[in-house]
Length: 171
Image (cartoon, rainbow, N blue to C red; front, side, top):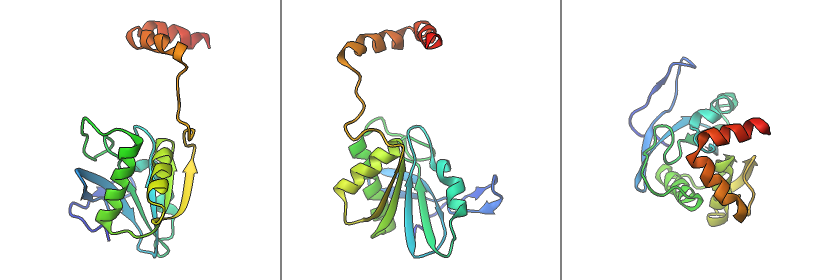
């Protein structure tokens, strides 16, 4: 099913792989596709990563049993990098546009780190599509917050990298 144009060659594994792009909503999303089995699995990577996070796992899956997909999220890898839309809600909407474009009806959803937060948000918004949900090291469901008294310190460190470096060496 992904069958878009622009299939690539992955020189590291020296085999032909499904590396198309697909138009999903307002994005051109790059992804890897492997296998031709009846069970679909969608892998969502974490922050500042790419589909390659899942490469070894996808290579281990029996091709006759699974059809796996690993897209580069908005702003990562070879997917478009718009200046806006970098929220968990938008990432989940991007996943929905991606699975719509591929015509996936039901699948196992696996997310790591920020991808885990995206997967959780997606499963809440689109439960009819998620057959199984696997979260690996996701952030807290309540989100990550910096205590109010910590903001001035974070702002200071953003402007003064040497001070941040000294503080890190003391820990």
